[in-house]
Image 1 (cartoon, rainbow, N blue to C red):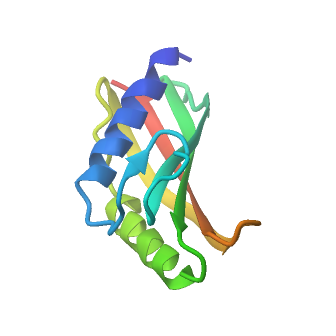
Image 2 (image 1 turned 135 degrees about the horizontal axis):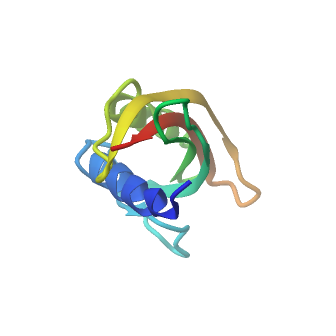
Length: 130
């Protein structure tokens, strides 16, 4: 499995989410101390082998986190809905690869220990080498 699919996949995800109306103050690679609410953090992208008999490929598990201020569960749910609209059942242009089936597996949200609301959405993607 080529290692270079991770960077183009993350770039494509950032581009898609940056172009969507998520209603957030920022989209970050990692959680930012003191970032203005609400915001989104790209979580883990876990890649596994998705080869078929005829085509090399990858499976990706993508986690996207959203955060809002204390007591704003509805805001996180709205952000998750906007992420869903931007990603679910959409073709994602991953440079050098063909993308098929980008689907949300689940979403959830809860209050963190400090009171801020933390949401997570998990997506699955099947990617074929071009």
